[in-house]
Length: 372
Image (cartoon, rainbow, N blue to C red; front, side):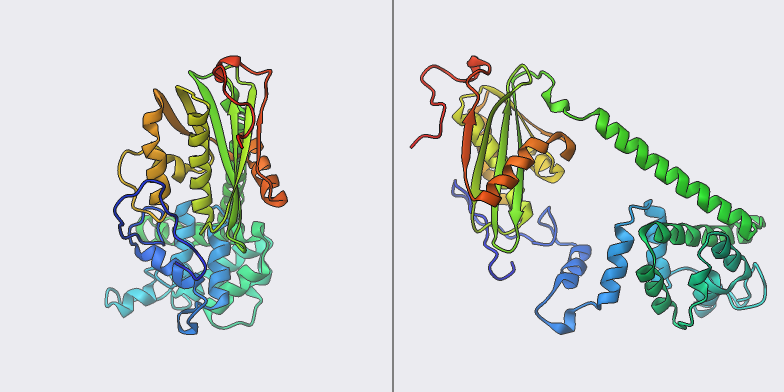
């Protein structure tokens, strides 16, 4: 754990267990170790240069198909089986570019110098990227990403993928493609990606407020707001009655919260607690953190850094005749997010029950305000 980052403690005592902080599952992976090295700020010997971090952050945030993003990652490390690399591995002797036959087929020639490549970048309005005087391929690639907009980076990545793919088609299928044909394919592919994003957005809008539809029992939604500088968070909990109408809201402040991950889990715990307090026999608890919801659904012992909180949530399931945990999109959870954010900003806890809601939610004699 980082300095000043406390470990969440369980309400119900249980045996300690070892966890790996870098993965949500609590299990070690090389990927998470690499990520922790990127975030390291203690030993300069372990710091990864800023240009590397910026490049990969931008690459992974482009939301490209995995086949393209991974190919660009391989290009950045020169892990492609170019003819020059294959000769180094003693697989082939011929290193001449199969397209132009003029130069050796290395990573720089494929994506910067080949006449077909030059034509692709020119027709894609990206001719400026090959006008650079930067010699090293890695330095050139990071410079291109730094100088490009998000839309340009997408075109560059798709262009590189189609260039590499067309080279393989030429070698294995004896089919050649011109720079004009490739640039047209890049434009079509980008348009398809944008169309998919638009349809996905429309679909999410059509599904909005789905949690307000009548369910078998009451619905409780939860969300969190987290301040990583102060290690404080606020849980926002909203109760929807059987008719789908707003029934109650509650916010709870927390201190010494180690991470947003733990803050989300604490909000889930508060939602479960509120269901018990209101004597609800059947309830559906919903949140927009898919990982937290999966952990709450599981009956297995959670081995992650929030294992203590998940253990508390799981132990409270016996207080209900029926309890379900379900994932919802952020757009369907706006009220819980809003009240959590306002509670953290004002540093105030609130509890509000709407008395004109379904009276069956509140057994006779049950208080309608936070008890003293």
